[in-house]
Amino acid sequence: MTPQQKKNLKALLIAGIALGVSSSLAIFAVPLYRIFCQVTGYGGTTQEAKAADRPVLDRVMQVRFDGSVDPHLPWRFHPLQQVETVKVGETGIAYYEATNLSDRPITGAAVYNVTPHKAGLYFAKIQCFCFTEQTLQPGETVKMGVTYFVDPAIAEDPNMDGVSEITLSYTFYFRKYADEPKATAKAAVATE
Image (cartoon, rainbow, N blue to C red; front, side, top):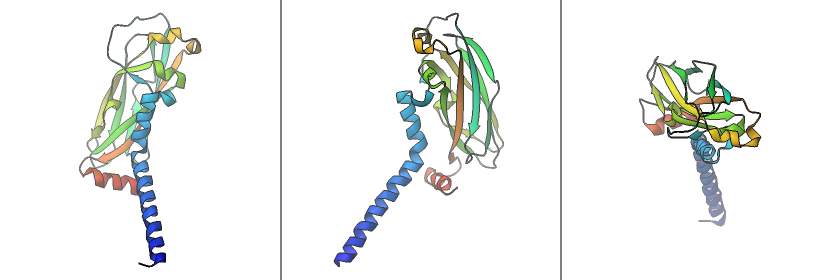
């Protein structure tokens, strides 16, 4: 092999590795960002909690609900209520509705956040459709719930004194066509 061929081979190998790394980052960006936010609370990511005894305070919170869908996912998704009023520490339940508008079974995953972002540390979900991927059959409509509470520790944080409204937002993303292998579904998303 000539020195020029070795140089070309080395450049091709580096380009291939860079392409592989960037493709992997693109495929796993949503799940990795979700994990990062859940661990750090970044971007208003809520906390997961177990149902437990906790005090219910007189302080009242307005909880607003929002839902959107990534353009690659042919679903309609929206909250069934716009706002709920709960006391801090009180358990609330909200429902969302999702419809698969395509002619194929599709699996989606919901990413969530809370605004104001500083309230994310105090907004806890006991049960949520966002904890697992959701598969909808063609034309299927499902009602999905989230059970939550605002942690009473919010009352001890002076930075939270002016907060009386929290918005819980979800965005559903395409994960895979449920009727084909996972590798093929990833390729379909990458080419859309």
